[in-house]
Image 1 (cartoon, rainbow, N blue to C red):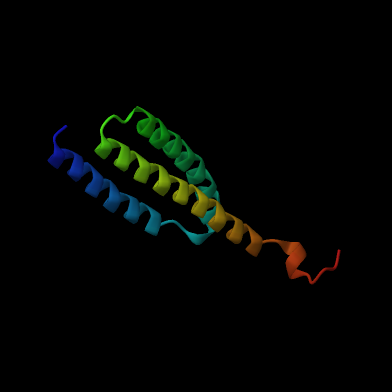
Image 2 (image 1 turned 30 degrees about the vertical axis):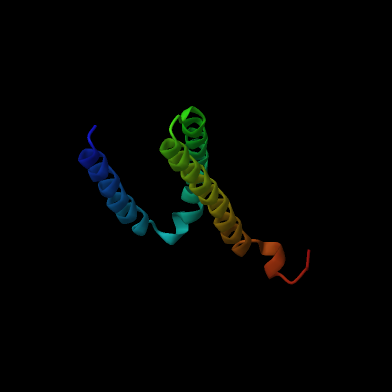
Length: 98
């Protein structure tokens, strides 16, 4: 695949992802976030494999950046999911009553 085709695929997927995510109702955010965290974990493993087989310094640098960004994405996803689930925790809203 030449560079222009790869760039086209990346830009198109970015726009498509933005449009899909912006139309998700608030009620479905938490279940979708949990599912996407699973997918991001797979992406992180793929980035680590790509880094492991990288041979040139450029490939190693791109692989390292991919691993760091994937790890940040997974960590941020779980942090956001935890905050959203804490909003629905009834034990904290009732003021300590059983």
